[in-house]
Image 1 (tube, one colour):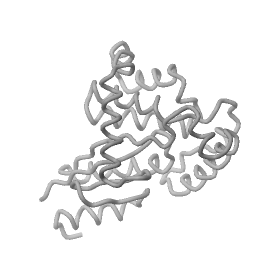
Image 2: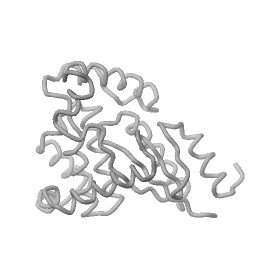
Image 3: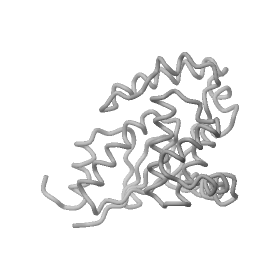
Image 4: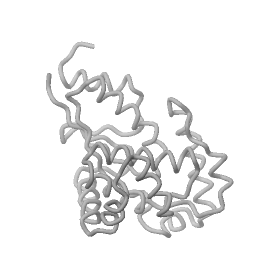
Length: 212
């Protein structure tokens, strides 16, 4: 069997990434020689990104929640709670606080803890309708995935975390990734979108030259 290395480009804001992540977990469980590497991609890198992209914060939230509805239909467990987020009064979040939290988790526990933290923050955002720009929310997520609290706080604010995100963004640019979710497989094959599990499985089987 050939080893397969999948770079998973994602953003904590991305509802389609939320649908794809559990499928990739199933893939790794079924094929232990598949490795997933997590790459940060900032859809809304700054506090005013939503306003710049959509004309106003209100218009941005309204349009994004329409994407949530579509992603929820794609999600196998239909976990995305659009109505709950629509009722919230805080500004729609931007990417960087959540991405920094994931990288801080990675410094403690490598790729597995990055993945756990990413999934937990996405659950807070898309299912629990919490404000993932609020550091207390991110800290609760860190505690939930068993991170050391004091080290998480220190790493979150570190230059190393900032540099790790910048390296991922450069990797995305060089690889031609301009949307998420995107997968780069063995450094050359690009798969875009929240593909169904059977598509991912078939792709990996063919790559490993295993009969379906």
